[in-house]
Amino acid sequence: MASREAALDAQIEAARVQAQQTVDAAQAQAAGIIRDAEAQVKAMQAEHEQKLSAEMQQIRAQARAEAGIQAEQTRGRAQARLDQAVDTIMRAVLP
Image 1 (cartoon, rainbow, N blue to C red):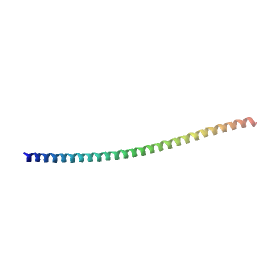
Image 2 (image 1 turned 90 degrees about the vertical axis):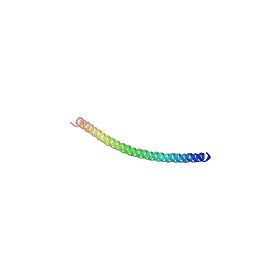
Image 3 (image 1 turned 30 degrees about the horizontal axis):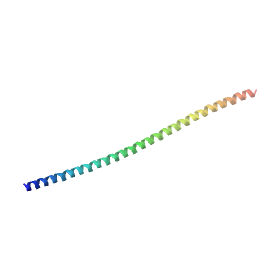
Image 4 (image 1 turned 60 degrees about the horizontal axis):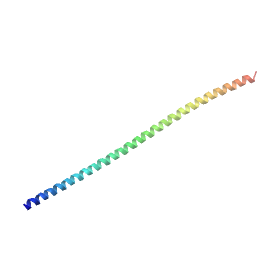
């Protein structure tokens, strides 16, 4: 009876050790999966930030170009008005 009990104790201990090893392996695998996922998240964030930065630069370039066009149009209109004013003054002053 004592030898059976000792054998059962040994089997229980072996099963406990095996279960602990299985848990440790699963935890290590889970930690690896988490590290991989975190690395993917960081890579995706970096890619998103790069795309966002490129889009912002494109928007700024478009805004500068549009502002330049509008400024040139405004200058053109102002010059036309100035030319018209000079012409009107010249007609009024000169007979």
